[in-house]
Length: 174
Image 1 (cartoon, rainbow, N blue to C red):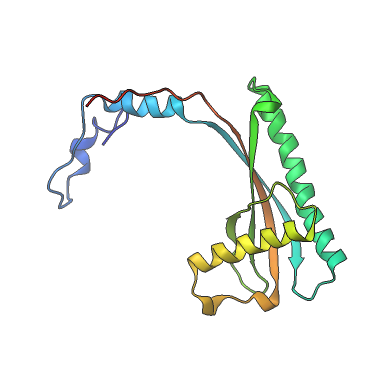
Image 2: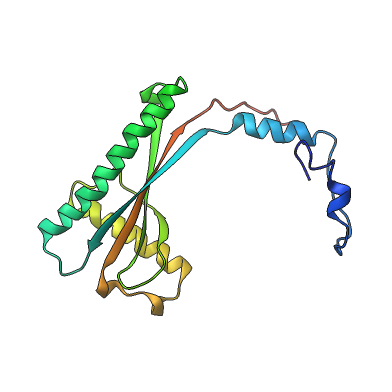
């Protein structure tokens, strides 16, 4: 156990558990605080939308669908820039990670998908978003659950803004 109060409450965690031993160390609180002080600044925003992409959809409709996703990402980016500016960070320090919540049309549950593009301005970009969904889906469900013929429904777009913190160099003593 680590953290400011982890070792303090360690004695009570074991009651009723068949655990041989718990391990902690004298600098547990400092270890936890050090990790918190070194973590990057991250803000994550979401916004719902309704976008359908089907295999037989004309290209101009696919581009409109992609633009709808792109518009949400652009809106979220501006909000993140404002949030970080209020914390004293310059726009140039902010990096973005984008994603969507999607599912095959007709299915009930959407899954969160990180996407490999910085926006959707072409059919190739939209295909990269749909492809990222399909790859993520395959890691969670068997192939028999897939239904790519139905198309993909994007129910939400999200964006993370990240401002990196300087990381300390920790010496290693042999």
